[in-house]
Amino acid sequence: MMQRTLLDKLWDAHEIHRRDDGVSLLWVDRHLVHEGSHHAFAKIAERGLPVAEPGLTFGVADHYAPTRGKPATSAIARMIDTLSKNTRQHGIECFGLDDPRRGIVHVIGPEQGLTLPGLLINCGDSHTSTHGAFGALAFGIGATEVAHVLATQTIWQTKPKSLKMTVTGDFGPGIGAKDLALHWISELGADGARGHAIEYSGPAVRGLSMEARMTLCNLSIEGGARFGMIAPDETTYSYIKGRRYAPSGADWDEAINAWRALPSDAGARYDREVTIDASEIAPVVTWGTSPEDALPVTSTVPTLEALAPKQAERFRSTLDYMGLRPGQPLEQVAIDEIFIGSCTNARIEDLRAAAAVLSGRQARVPGIVAPGSQGIKRQAEEEGLDRIFKDAGLEWVGAGCSMCVAMNGDHVEPGRRCASTTNRNFRGRQGPGARTHLMSPAMVAAAAVTGHLTDVRPLLDGRSAA
Image (cartoon, rainbow, N blue to C red; front, side, top):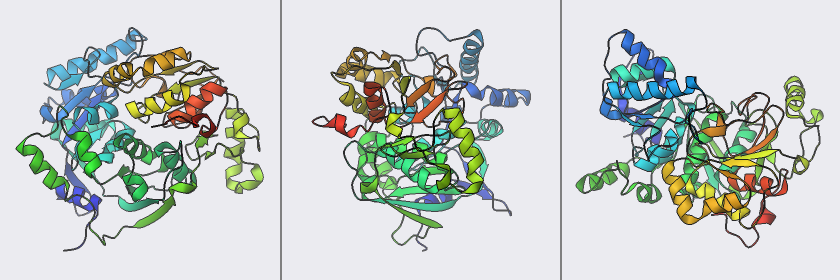
């Protein structure tokens, strides 16, 4: 038999039919819906259709969920209520505002054991790729596609090309998955992986925790990829075992046997291959309005001379929006506030990394720390992390997307500069006129302590950034 990649195995396992034009009809194992899915529910209601597989669909209130008190507006309250009504009407389990398990969809899916190797997972959210960290076929879909999945539990898709990204070497102190992701996106560009599914591999990837692997896969789409994946291994199995929706008993043994067959075969061929040396990666921050506008924090803002002519117009516009000047040292960029949260970096490991920097120190700027789920919030409080954040002068709030997408009332005011653990620094992403710099949780904590973009490594001397 021909050696197959992880992508090949997952695609073949879910393909029901392939049209003459090569487009595949795929079976969907998990469908995650949230407040923005009301359009899709309305579409199936217009046609009098039921949800095909309500037991495979799960509702989550996250984008508009308040992190403090009640919903920010009556319109937001209606959206959250509509999600509850739609899921209740169709017999779908919903992690709503009153559910102690609630949180960000791409955080609680893995946390609850809904995310498993070998599954095809869809959600009307671009960062669904997060679940690929488990060896799952996971990608975001649009409103029309959400309606199709609700009605049929299937989706039409064109198989992407394969890109193997091998990461060799060892990460330096204070450097991890967020730095790796921003590094490769800056090297290949925001369209560098367009049309491809990335399979991350190599010793540096194998050494990452599941939390870090989720961060890496989450950011795959910011480099143009359709999704990212990491083949399951013992780290994966250890994370999953014992979670609420995970297999148990004899089913667990059977699942493990199936999951062990998922990694790419030796000698499998990819459409593209890229190799990155983890030891060459420094702490990375973004300076512009795209994740590809990223550099080591010890660098300077690019100059016009260093760019291709076709980049000049965007460059000038970007610097004007961001309030920066060519050649300005990044460590001289003062910030106004910080945000730690989002489906990219709001897991317990992320909070621990930030707390390692902040412990015993005072933040010079205000900021919000929003855990990815209420479960993570409780765990952080049991470990005393919340006290570290509050003692530093930061605000400890409830779970939700919060300031990442600025839909729930948490936002950055126009012209203010935010050091953020989120996934996008687009214009207005954190609020109209907001200026966002992306970086790791430890780097955000360092910026909070100093009041400007800062290399976290000196602040970690004698401390653990685990």
